[in-house]
Length: 136
Image 1: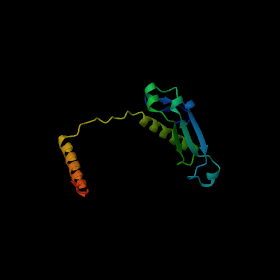
Image 2 (image 1 turned 135 degrees about the horizontal axis):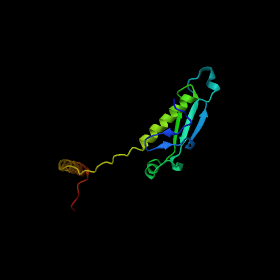
Image 3 (image 1 turned 120 degrees about the vertical axis):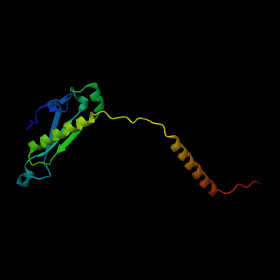
Image 4 (image 1 turned 180 degrees about the vertical axis):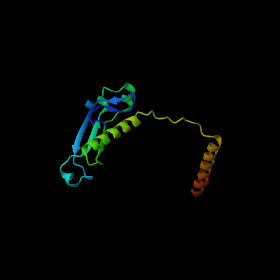
């Protein structure tokens, strides 16, 4: 069991200090039995990478918006805190994965020919709908 007040390990390159994580608690609409109206088991975990001191310049560039994660699927606040920490770590790690850029390619000669033929055919259809010119 991970202590919800410890630093959050995201990857080998990034560990978010516990001091940068802020928590909010509220009543959950989920399961809870008789204690549903008395315990604040819903958890919101907030981390703003823009004010983080744990990030490199590249990481700061990749993470531009605050992360807000909520968890309310468990009956206990502790389990929801652990679920929120796990979810935040997953989201930050996936946001740091470099995106592959699309490699631009030229259209094939056959596709260019098909496109031009279709344009020519469409132009002829539209031309046949016009009024004939009067050469007066």
